Amino acid sequence: LINPRQISYPGEDVFEGIIDYGVEMRFDYRNVIGKRVIIHGHGAFTMENIRTCSEYGAKHMYVVCRKRNLTCPRVVSWFINQANPPITGAHCLNMLKVAYKHCNYDPWDMHSVTSNASRTSAAMSQKTRFGIGDIYSWPLHTA
Image (cartoon, rainbow, N blue to C red):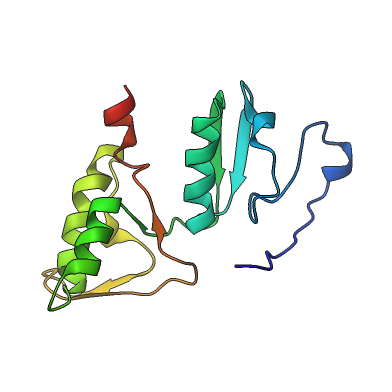
């Protein structure tokens, strides 16, 4: 997390916009006011950058990623961290399903989820940090 993977893409040298990594508080988000923004990836920093670009008045945001990773709404994250005993993977996915329904996506179908046919048992494994944020239910609160 402290050393982002630096990736260069063909054509960056002719792109007339700003290209930077939205980590380590090194990007000046005043540059997104009224602009169209592309955010690459779908990990924890993606969720933070979507929120921050929205707060700074980005005109439109596009998220470009190979795989959509699980993102956890804050209320679900709070519940997971307070639960004693810990909740099951199936219980977590059923809570995530409530938020994901607003974008017509079923978290049970994610690449990182393995479950039995009846969806009573599940395991989640992804290579990025679990993003915490409310972007999948956010449109209901901002419309």
